[in-house]
Image (cartoon, rainbow, N blue to C red; front, side):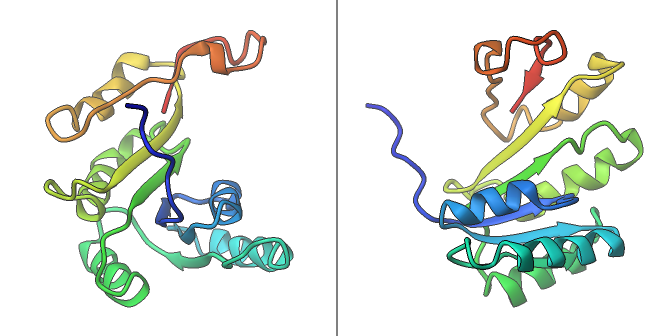
Length: 167
C-alpha cells in the first residue's frame, strides 16, 4: 500500500537561513517554526515571512535556536509547539560544518526522540569535498531512523546536480 500523503503538520526547520523551505512548507498548509542561530537570519526570516504573508495560510514563526541548547529546544517545544513534538524536523545544507554536527544531532534527537513514531526528519544534503566525513554524520542515526537517498533521476540534467545527494 503506498504511503499516505502528509497532512498539514507541525514543522520545525533547523538552520533556516532565508526561509525558503519554511515558506514552501507553509504554502502546503503546515504550521512552521523556522529556527536559526544567527540573529541576522531571524530578521531576514521575519522579513521574508511578512513579504509572503498574503500567500501563506499560516505565517511561519521565526525564532533563535542554537543547536545543542537543550533548554532552548525545550522552550520551543513548550512555548511554540504547546508541548507537542513536531511531525517533521527539516534542514537543508546544514551538514557541511563539521564543528556543529554533534550539536545538530543532539537537537534533532531532542525534537524527534526515539519512540516518536509519527516524527520524520528530512535533511537535504549535497555531498561536498569529503563525502566520507559527511556520511559519518548520517551514520550517527543509523540505529534510530530509517534513511533513504533521493535518486539522481529526480535532479536536473546538469553536472552540478548529477552527483550523490541525500534527503
